[in-house]
Length: 440
Image 1 (cartoon, helix red, strand yellow):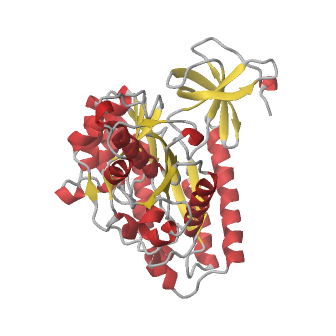
Image 2 (spheres, helix red, strand yellow):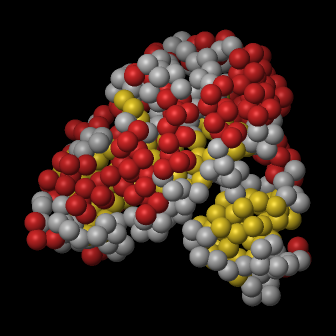
Protein backbone atom coordinates (compact mmCIF):
# COMPACT_ATOMS: atom_id res chain seq x y z
CA UNK A 1 0.00 0.00 0.00
CA UNK A 2 0.92 3.62 -0.52
CA UNK A 3 0.09 5.54 2.65
CA UNK A 4 0.03 9.07 4.01
CA UNK A 5 -0.11 10.14 7.65
CA UNK A 6 -1.80 13.42 8.67
CA UNK A 7 -0.66 14.50 12.14
CA UNK A 8 -2.46 16.92 14.46
CA UNK A 9 -1.45 18.10 17.92
CA UNK A 10 1.80 18.22 19.81
CA UNK A 11 5.32 16.93 19.09
CA UNK A 12 4.53 13.78 21.05
CA UNK A 13 1.98 12.97 18.35
CA UNK A 14 4.68 13.50 15.74
CA UNK A 15 6.77 10.77 17.36
CA UNK A 16 3.76 8.45 17.34
CA UNK A 17 3.26 9.14 13.64
CA UNK A 18 6.91 8.29 13.07
CA UNK A 19 6.37 4.99 14.87
CA UNK A 20 3.35 4.24 12.68
CA UNK A 21 5.41 5.03 9.58
CA UNK A 22 8.28 2.81 10.67
CA UNK A 23 5.92 -0.08 11.40
CA UNK A 24 4.21 0.31 8.02
CA UNK A 25 7.56 0.44 6.23
CA UNK A 26 8.69 -2.71 7.98
CA UNK A 27 5.45 -4.36 6.87
CA UNK A 28 6.24 -3.54 3.24
CA UNK A 29 4.27 -0.33 2.59
CA UNK A 30 5.55 2.95 1.17
CA UNK A 31 4.80 6.57 2.02
CA UNK A 32 3.50 8.97 -0.60
CA UNK A 33 3.41 12.78 -0.45
CA UNK A 34 0.30 12.81 -2.66
CA UNK A 35 -2.82 12.06 -0.65
CA UNK A 36 -4.84 11.41 -3.80
CA UNK A 37 -2.45 8.58 -4.68
CA UNK A 38 -2.58 7.01 -1.22
CA UNK A 39 -4.29 3.67 -0.71
CA UNK A 40 -4.37 4.34 3.03
CA UNK A 41 -4.72 7.68 4.83
CA UNK A 42 -4.06 7.75 8.59
CA UNK A 43 -5.24 10.71 10.68
CA UNK A 44 -3.38 10.95 13.99
CA UNK A 45 -5.53 13.13 16.23
CA UNK A 46 -5.30 15.28 19.35
CA UNK A 47 -7.91 15.28 22.11
CA UNK A 48 -6.32 17.45 24.79
CA UNK A 49 -8.92 20.23 24.83
CA UNK A 50 -12.29 20.93 23.20
CA UNK A 51 -10.75 22.96 20.37
CA UNK A 52 -8.33 20.11 19.59
CA UNK A 53 -11.16 17.59 19.46
CA UNK A 54 -13.16 19.85 17.16
CA UNK A 55 -10.12 20.28 14.91
CA UNK A 56 -9.70 16.49 14.83
CA UNK A 57 -13.36 15.99 13.96
CA UNK A 58 -13.18 18.60 11.19
CA UNK A 59 -10.06 17.00 9.75
CA UNK A 60 -11.66 13.55 9.78
CA UNK A 61 -14.78 14.85 8.05
CA UNK A 62 -12.70 16.67 5.44
CA UNK A 63 -10.53 13.63 4.66
CA UNK A 64 -13.62 11.41 4.49
CA UNK A 65 -15.31 13.80 2.06
CA UNK A 66 -12.18 14.11 -0.09
CA UNK A 67 -11.22 10.43 -0.21
CA UNK A 68 -10.77 8.91 -3.64
CA UNK A 69 -12.30 5.57 -4.73
CA UNK A 70 -10.86 2.50 -2.98
CA UNK A 71 -8.91 4.68 -0.52
CA UNK A 72 -9.05 3.62 3.13
CA UNK A 73 -9.22 6.17 5.95
CA UNK A 74 -8.36 5.28 9.53
CA UNK A 75 -8.25 7.52 12.60
CA UNK A 76 -5.93 7.06 15.55
CA UNK A 77 -4.55 9.08 18.47
CA UNK A 78 -5.95 10.80 21.53
CA UNK A 79 -9.35 11.85 20.17
CA UNK A 80 -9.98 8.35 18.90
CA UNK A 81 -8.86 6.96 22.26
CA UNK A 82 -11.46 8.88 24.27
CA UNK A 83 -14.32 9.28 21.79
CA UNK A 84 -14.05 6.24 19.52
CA UNK A 85 -17.81 5.88 19.09
CA UNK A 86 -18.07 9.43 17.78
CA UNK A 87 -15.19 8.80 15.39
CA UNK A 88 -16.66 5.70 13.78
CA UNK A 89 -20.01 7.43 13.37
CA UNK A 90 -18.43 9.69 10.72
CA UNK A 91 -19.36 8.41 7.29
CA UNK A 92 -16.25 7.30 5.40
CA UNK A 93 -14.08 6.22 8.36
CA UNK A 94 -12.94 2.61 7.85
CA UNK A 95 -11.44 2.02 11.28
CA UNK A 96 -10.58 3.80 14.53
CA UNK A 97 -7.64 3.01 16.80
CA UNK A 98 -6.51 4.46 20.11
CA UNK A 99 -3.06 5.60 21.15
CA UNK A 100 0.13 3.61 20.50
CA UNK A 101 -1.70 1.41 17.98
CA UNK A 102 1.23 1.16 15.58
CA UNK A 103 1.08 -2.61 15.17
CA UNK A 104 -2.71 -2.69 14.89
CA UNK A 105 -2.60 -0.15 12.06
CA UNK A 106 0.08 -2.18 10.26
CA UNK A 107 -2.03 -5.30 10.66
CA UNK A 108 -5.01 -3.42 9.24
CA UNK A 109 -2.89 -2.47 6.21
CA UNK A 110 -1.56 -6.02 5.84
CA UNK A 111 1.97 -7.37 5.53
CA UNK A 112 3.72 -7.54 2.17
CA UNK A 113 6.22 -10.33 2.72
CA UNK A 114 8.00 -9.83 -0.60
CA UNK A 115 8.96 -6.27 0.28
CA UNK A 116 9.87 -6.59 3.95
CA UNK A 117 13.44 -5.38 3.35
CA UNK A 118 12.66 -2.08 1.64
CA UNK A 119 14.59 0.88 3.06
CA UNK A 120 12.92 3.08 5.65
CA UNK A 121 12.32 6.25 3.65
CA UNK A 122 9.19 7.42 5.40
CA UNK A 123 10.77 10.20 7.41
CA UNK A 124 13.15 11.62 4.84
CA UNK A 125 15.72 14.24 5.77
CA UNK A 126 14.51 16.22 8.75
CA UNK A 127 16.94 18.46 10.65
CA UNK A 128 15.06 18.08 13.96
CA UNK A 129 13.44 14.89 15.19
CA UNK A 130 11.47 14.12 18.33
CA UNK A 131 12.40 11.35 20.74
CA UNK A 132 9.58 10.43 23.11
CA UNK A 133 11.29 9.19 26.25
CA UNK A 134 8.19 8.16 28.21
CA UNK A 135 4.43 8.04 28.15
CA UNK A 136 1.62 8.33 30.66
CA UNK A 137 1.42 10.85 33.48
CA UNK A 138 1.03 10.41 37.22
CA UNK A 139 0.67 14.13 38.04
CA UNK A 140 -2.63 15.21 39.65
CA UNK A 141 -3.28 18.45 37.70
CA UNK A 142 -6.99 19.21 38.06
CA UNK A 143 -7.37 20.81 34.60
CA UNK A 144 -5.75 18.07 32.52
CA UNK A 145 -7.25 14.97 30.94
CA UNK A 146 -3.95 13.53 29.66
CA UNK A 147 -3.72 10.89 32.44
CA UNK A 148 -7.15 9.66 31.41
CA UNK A 149 -6.00 9.41 27.78
CA UNK A 150 -2.41 8.26 28.11
CA UNK A 151 -2.70 6.38 31.39
CA UNK A 152 -2.01 7.37 34.99
CA UNK A 153 1.11 5.25 35.26
CA UNK A 154 4.33 6.89 34.13
CA UNK A 155 6.23 4.61 31.73
CA UNK A 156 9.84 5.42 30.87
CA UNK A 157 11.41 3.92 27.77
CA UNK A 158 14.59 1.99 28.53
CA UNK A 159 17.82 3.91 27.79
CA UNK A 160 19.19 1.30 25.37
CA UNK A 161 16.05 1.56 23.23
CA UNK A 162 16.21 5.36 23.21
CA UNK A 163 19.88 5.40 22.24
CA UNK A 164 19.11 2.99 19.39
CA UNK A 165 16.17 5.11 18.20
CA UNK A 166 18.21 8.32 18.41
CA UNK A 167 20.98 6.75 16.32
CA UNK A 168 18.42 5.74 13.71
CA UNK A 169 17.04 9.29 13.59
CA UNK A 170 20.54 10.70 13.11
CA UNK A 171 21.20 8.13 10.37
CA UNK A 172 18.12 9.43 8.55
CA UNK A 173 19.39 12.99 8.66
CA UNK A 174 18.44 14.47 12.02
CA UNK A 175 20.99 16.90 13.44
CA UNK A 176 18.93 17.77 16.52
CA UNK A 177 17.13 15.34 18.84
CA UNK A 178 14.29 16.87 20.88
CA UNK A 179 13.41 14.94 24.05
CA UNK A 180 9.67 15.01 24.75
CA UNK A 181 7.35 13.43 27.31
CA UNK A 182 4.32 14.39 29.36
CA UNK A 183 6.86 15.08 32.13
CA UNK A 184 10.47 14.65 31.00
CA UNK A 185 11.88 15.20 34.50
CA UNK A 186 10.07 12.10 35.78
CA UNK A 187 12.15 9.91 33.50
CA UNK A 188 13.34 6.86 35.43
CA UNK A 189 11.26 7.72 38.51
CA UNK A 190 9.46 4.36 38.46
CA UNK A 191 12.88 2.70 38.67
CA UNK A 192 13.81 4.80 41.68
CA UNK A 193 16.35 6.90 39.74
CA UNK A 194 15.95 10.56 40.69
CA UNK A 195 18.62 11.53 38.14
CA UNK A 196 17.42 9.29 35.31
CA UNK A 197 17.02 12.18 32.88
CA UNK A 198 20.53 13.50 33.51
CA UNK A 199 21.98 10.04 32.94
CA UNK A 200 19.96 9.59 29.76
CA UNK A 201 21.19 12.91 28.36
CA UNK A 202 24.79 11.91 29.05
CA UNK A 203 24.30 8.64 27.15
CA UNK A 204 22.58 10.31 24.22
CA UNK A 205 25.33 12.92 24.01
CA UNK A 206 28.01 10.23 23.99
CA UNK A 207 26.33 7.64 21.77
CA UNK A 208 23.62 9.10 19.51
CA UNK A 209 25.74 11.15 17.14
CA UNK A 210 23.35 14.11 17.38
CA UNK A 211 24.79 17.61 17.16
CA UNK A 212 22.09 19.10 19.39
CA UNK A 213 19.96 17.72 22.20
CA UNK A 214 16.99 19.80 23.33
CA UNK A 215 14.84 19.20 26.41
CA UNK A 216 11.12 19.94 26.57
CA UNK A 217 8.40 19.70 29.26
CA UNK A 218 10.32 19.84 32.53
CA UNK A 219 8.16 19.78 35.66
CA UNK A 220 8.77 22.60 38.19
CA UNK A 221 10.64 21.41 41.24
CA UNK A 222 12.15 18.37 39.52
CA UNK A 223 14.94 20.18 37.70
CA UNK A 224 17.64 18.57 39.84
CA UNK A 225 21.14 19.96 40.46
CA UNK A 226 22.47 16.97 38.51
CA UNK A 227 20.31 17.86 35.51
CA UNK A 228 21.43 21.50 35.61
CA UNK A 229 25.07 20.40 35.78
CA UNK A 230 24.72 18.02 32.84
CA UNK A 231 22.94 20.65 30.75
CA UNK A 232 25.60 23.23 31.52
CA UNK A 233 28.58 20.96 30.86
CA UNK A 234 27.47 18.82 27.92
CA UNK A 235 28.34 20.57 24.62
CA UNK A 236 25.52 18.93 22.63
CA UNK A 237 22.80 20.13 25.01
CA UNK A 238 21.07 23.32 23.93
CA UNK A 239 20.96 25.92 26.67
CA UNK A 240 17.18 25.90 26.46
CA UNK A 241 14.53 24.53 28.76
CA UNK A 242 10.75 24.40 28.59
CA UNK A 243 9.15 24.47 32.06
CA UNK A 244 5.34 24.72 31.89
CA UNK A 245 4.45 26.66 35.05
CA UNK A 246 0.73 27.32 34.31
CA UNK A 247 0.33 30.27 36.72
CA UNK A 248 2.08 32.67 39.05
CA UNK A 249 -0.40 32.77 41.95
CA UNK A 250 0.17 30.21 44.74
CA UNK A 251 -3.55 29.93 45.48
CA UNK A 252 -4.46 29.27 41.84
CA UNK A 253 -1.67 26.72 41.59
CA UNK A 254 -3.03 24.95 44.67
CA UNK A 255 -6.41 24.64 43.00
CA UNK A 256 -4.64 23.33 39.92
CA UNK A 257 -2.73 20.85 42.13
CA UNK A 258 0.48 22.18 40.65
CA UNK A 259 3.69 23.08 42.51
CA UNK A 260 2.78 26.31 44.29
CA UNK A 261 5.97 27.23 46.16
CA UNK A 262 6.96 30.28 44.15
CA UNK A 263 10.20 30.56 46.08
CA UNK A 264 11.14 27.12 44.76
CA UNK A 265 10.22 28.16 41.22
CA UNK A 266 12.30 31.32 41.39
CA UNK A 267 15.17 29.33 42.90
CA UNK A 268 15.07 26.90 39.97
CA UNK A 269 15.14 29.76 37.48
CA UNK A 270 18.04 31.38 39.33
CA UNK A 271 20.07 28.13 39.36
CA UNK A 272 19.53 27.59 35.65
CA UNK A 273 20.57 31.13 34.80
CA UNK A 274 23.57 31.02 37.11
CA UNK A 275 24.82 27.79 35.52
CA UNK A 276 23.98 28.91 31.96
CA UNK A 277 23.81 32.71 31.68
CA UNK A 278 22.78 32.43 28.03
CA UNK A 279 19.92 29.96 28.65
CA UNK A 280 16.57 30.54 26.93
CA UNK A 281 13.68 29.51 29.18
CA UNK A 282 10.23 28.83 27.81
CA UNK A 283 7.00 28.38 29.76
CA UNK A 284 3.21 28.30 29.38
CA UNK A 285 0.38 29.80 31.43
CA UNK A 286 -3.36 29.26 31.79
CA UNK A 287 -5.68 32.22 32.40
CA UNK A 288 -9.25 32.10 33.60
CA UNK A 289 -8.92 29.02 35.79
CA UNK A 290 -11.98 28.55 38.04
CA UNK A 291 -11.97 31.01 40.92
CA UNK A 292 -9.16 33.16 39.47
CA UNK A 293 -9.68 36.57 41.05
CA UNK A 294 -8.38 39.89 39.74
CA UNK A 295 -5.75 39.91 42.47
CA UNK A 296 -4.62 36.38 41.59
CA UNK A 297 -4.41 37.36 37.93
CA UNK A 298 -2.37 40.37 39.07
CA UNK A 299 0.02 37.99 40.83
CA UNK A 300 0.50 36.19 37.52
CA UNK A 301 1.29 39.46 35.73
CA UNK A 302 3.76 40.47 38.46
CA UNK A 303 5.48 37.09 38.29
CA UNK A 304 5.76 37.23 34.49
CA UNK A 305 7.18 40.75 34.59
CA UNK A 306 9.72 39.75 37.24
CA UNK A 307 10.83 36.42 35.72
CA UNK A 308 11.19 37.70 32.12
CA UNK A 309 10.89 34.42 30.22
CA UNK A 310 12.47 34.33 26.78
CA UNK A 311 9.52 32.47 25.31
CA UNK A 312 6.04 31.92 26.68
CA UNK A 313 2.61 30.82 25.58
CA UNK A 314 -0.73 31.51 27.23
CA UNK A 315 -3.96 29.59 26.95
CA UNK A 316 -7.52 30.33 27.96
CA UNK A 317 -8.85 27.75 30.43
CA UNK A 318 -11.32 25.35 28.86
CA UNK A 319 -13.22 22.84 31.06
CA UNK A 320 -12.43 19.26 30.09
CA UNK A 321 -14.95 16.53 30.79
CA UNK A 322 -13.87 14.18 33.54
CA UNK A 323 -11.41 16.57 35.18
CA UNK A 324 -11.92 17.96 38.71
CA UNK A 325 -11.63 21.57 37.51
CA UNK A 326 -14.60 21.15 35.18
CA UNK A 327 -16.85 20.64 38.21
CA UNK A 328 -15.42 23.52 40.25
CA UNK A 329 -17.66 26.42 41.16
CA UNK A 330 -16.76 29.99 40.18
CA UNK A 331 -16.17 29.30 36.50
CA UNK A 332 -14.86 32.53 34.96
CA UNK A 333 -17.00 34.30 32.32
CA UNK A 334 -15.66 33.96 28.78
CA UNK A 335 -15.38 37.72 28.32
CA UNK A 336 -13.22 38.00 31.44
CA UNK A 337 -11.01 35.10 30.35
CA UNK A 338 -10.42 36.64 26.94
CA UNK A 339 -9.65 40.08 28.42
CA UNK A 340 -7.08 38.59 30.78
CA UNK A 341 -5.58 36.49 28.02
CA UNK A 342 -5.14 39.54 25.82
CA UNK A 343 -3.51 41.51 28.65
CA UNK A 344 -1.11 38.67 29.44
CA UNK A 345 -0.21 38.14 25.78
CA UNK A 346 0.65 41.81 25.36
CA UNK A 347 2.99 41.62 28.35
CA UNK A 348 4.58 38.40 27.11
CA UNK A 349 5.08 39.86 23.64
CA UNK A 350 6.76 42.94 25.08
CA UNK A 351 9.15 40.81 27.16
CA UNK A 352 9.91 38.47 24.25
CA UNK A 353 10.67 41.40 21.96
CA UNK A 354 12.99 42.90 24.56
CA UNK A 355 14.79 39.57 25.06
CA UNK A 356 15.14 39.23 21.29
CA UNK A 357 16.64 42.72 21.08
CA UNK A 358 19.34 41.56 23.48
CA UNK A 359 20.47 39.00 20.89
CA UNK A 360 21.43 41.64 18.33
CA UNK A 361 25.19 41.48 17.74
CA UNK A 362 25.56 37.88 18.93
CA UNK A 363 27.10 35.26 16.68
CA UNK A 364 25.28 31.94 16.92
CA UNK A 365 25.13 28.60 15.14
CA UNK A 366 22.07 28.32 12.90
CA UNK A 367 20.55 24.95 12.05
CA UNK A 368 19.09 25.47 8.58
CA UNK A 369 15.57 24.11 8.13
CA UNK A 370 14.74 25.33 4.64
CA UNK A 371 14.81 28.16 2.20
CA UNK A 372 12.42 30.78 3.52
CA UNK A 373 10.55 31.05 0.24
CA UNK A 374 11.48 34.72 0.04
CA UNK A 375 14.21 36.83 -1.46
CA UNK A 376 15.52 40.27 -0.65
CA UNK A 377 14.58 43.22 -2.84
CA UNK A 378 17.81 42.49 -4.73
CA UNK A 379 16.70 38.92 -5.46
CA UNK A 380 19.08 37.21 -3.06
CA UNK A 381 17.76 34.03 -1.38
CA UNK A 382 16.89 33.83 2.28
CA UNK A 383 17.32 30.76 4.46
CA UNK A 384 15.26 29.94 7.55
CA UNK A 385 16.49 28.11 10.60
CA UNK A 386 16.83 28.07 14.34
CA UNK A 387 19.56 28.71 16.86
CA UNK A 388 19.70 26.97 20.23
CA UNK A 389 17.19 29.58 21.47
CA UNK A 390 14.30 28.44 19.24
CA UNK A 391 12.53 25.10 19.49
CA UNK A 392 10.93 23.64 16.38
CA UNK A 393 7.21 24.30 15.89
CA UNK A 394 6.74 26.42 19.02
CA UNK A 395 9.19 29.33 18.76
CA UNK A 396 10.11 31.81 16.06
CA UNK A 397 12.62 31.49 13.24
CA UNK A 398 15.90 33.12 12.33
CA UNK A 399 15.97 34.36 8.73
CA UNK A 400 19.32 34.94 7.07
CA UNK A 401 20.63 35.94 3.67
CA UNK A 402 22.40 33.05 1.97
CA UNK A 403 22.09 29.63 0.46
CA UNK A 404 22.26 26.38 2.41
CA UNK A 405 20.67 22.96 2.47
CA UNK A 406 18.33 21.78 5.26
CA UNK A 407 20.34 20.17 8.01
CA UNK A 408 23.45 22.29 7.52
CA UNK A 409 24.87 24.56 10.21
CA UNK A 410 25.86 28.15 9.50
CA UNK A 411 27.38 30.77 11.79
CA UNK A 412 25.21 33.86 11.75
CA UNK A 413 25.26 37.25 13.40
CA UNK A 414 21.93 38.59 14.64
CA UNK A 415 21.38 42.03 13.14
CA UNK A 416 17.74 42.82 13.86
CA UNK A 417 14.94 41.65 16.13
CA UNK A 418 11.57 41.47 14.41
CA UNK A 419 9.30 40.75 17.36
CA UNK A 420 8.77 37.01 17.13
CA UNK A 421 11.55 36.26 14.61
CA UNK A 422 15.14 37.42 14.13
CA UNK A 423 17.05 38.62 11.10
CA UNK A 424 20.68 37.60 10.71
CA UNK A 425 23.55 37.57 8.28
CA UNK A 426 25.66 34.51 7.56
CA UNK A 427 29.18 35.35 8.68
CA UNK A 428 30.92 32.09 7.78
CA UNK A 429 30.27 32.91 4.11
CA UNK A 430 31.38 36.55 4.45
CA UNK A 431 27.97 37.78 3.31
CA UNK A 432 26.68 41.24 4.11
CA UNK A 433 23.18 42.57 4.03
CA UNK A 434 21.66 45.98 4.42
CA UNK A 435 18.66 46.29 6.68
CA UNK A 436 17.07 48.28 3.85
CA UNK A 437 16.89 45.10 1.72
CA UNK A 438 15.01 43.03 4.28
CA UNK A 439 11.55 42.12 2.93
CA UNK A 440 8.68 43.48 4.99
